Image 1 (tube, rainbow, N blue to C red):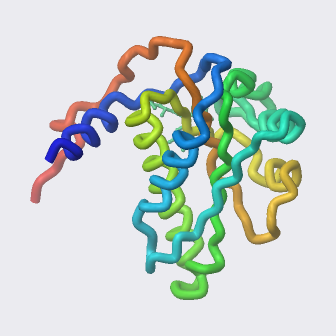
Image 2: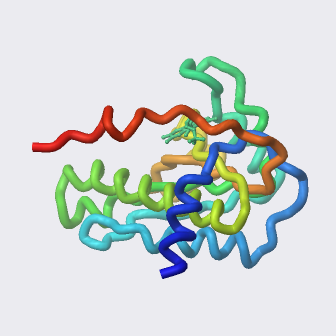
Length: 182
Ligand SMILES: Cc1cc2nc3c(=O)[nH]c(=O)nc-3n(C[C@H](O)[C@H](O)[C@H](O)COP(=O)(O)O)c2cc1C
């Protein structure tokens, strides 16, 4: 069961990394991280996602320009994203899920894709990569900037790369605060 221990280590070691070294991530590592995400569970096994690897410099800048720091959409872009050698725009393709579950399917599909994002982050950590989940961006602007398919809904930007910072352990509510029993 060595694999089980490694998974738990990766889950606990993952940190949001916001500064990256310029070194490229080997192609097979990027592909393994993306491949791992396909194994996330999905409602009705609809797999309602697309992973858009944004590599072209103009496309990267256009995507980063749709981001904003903090809580206000008017805030400046999250410029640290320029340091990440890999940017993956993770999109929801809700129609497959809605075909089965009706209008509820839109919410289900978003949950499914969130599970894929987390799986990507854990896989990245297992490879020794830093990663970050970025939700602070305008999905409509990102859709237009990258000329996505009409039904694709951008949900998250995932930054990947070799970390250039030591991230302090973030605070977590103790389990005793969040665990209830009935
Ligand atoms: C849905 C979602 C959106 C997020 N958006 C951003 C973001 O736009 N920019 C950012 O720097 N971090 C973002 N984060 C990362 C959180 O700030 C981070 O997960 C949290 O502070 C806990 O730190 P940790 O990831 O290192 O455990 C986001 C996380 C989630 C789950």
